[in-house]
Image 1 (cartoon, rainbow, N blue to C red):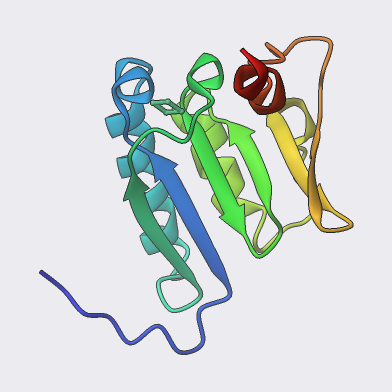
Image 2: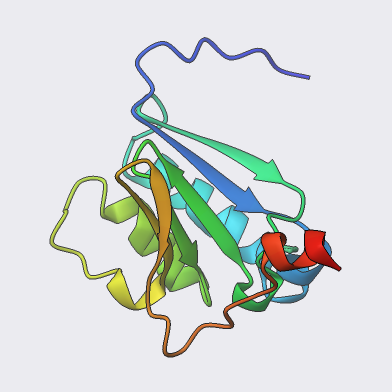
Length: 127
Ligand code: FES
């Protein structure tokens, strides 16, 4: 058990470690993200947390970055590393990995042509 002093943290990276994401290199991607943070000496700025299922299993491995509110489909350790590198270099291209982005106080889907839309929570309530 650890209690970190998180003062000064600029980003919180949530790495899905649910069963679907773990089947799609979730452990390797988690370790790569943490290794990249260490390599770039960003421990003070970027905090990571392993999570359970984030409800987007078709996009495994799901990585969520706040405060931006960007949800990524990290399909490789390289994508995981790029998510961290983009903290220092915003020109790094991650748009192809984007699932959702937080805009005007709501999540908006990205890359809808290649993503599984998913089950609507509203339709589910009506059943
Ligand atoms: S297990 Fe990762 S989104 Fe479901």
